[in-house]
Image 1 (cartoon, one colour):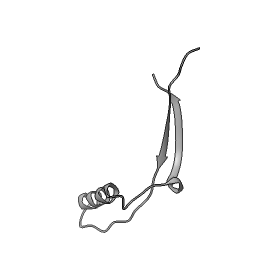
Image 2: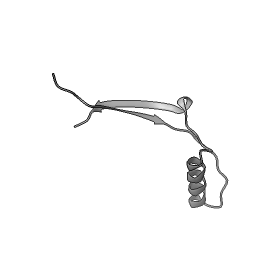
Image 3: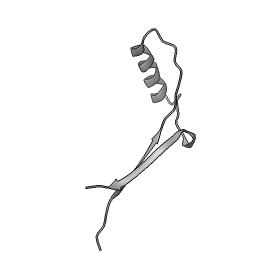
Amino acid sequence: MRVYEIVFTETLSKVVKIEARNREEALQVAHDMYMSEEIILDANDFQEYSYGLLK
């Protein structure tokens, strides 16, 4: 018998409204909030999954 490696990928997504002076600032604020765990995605944010063989 052979051993196969299977990779599973889940996609979570959430929309967050952020006030900012421009797009770059909004992205920076969002990034900082995510990195400081002010934005946390969980099972309620699940969108889809996929799986397949690793080469």
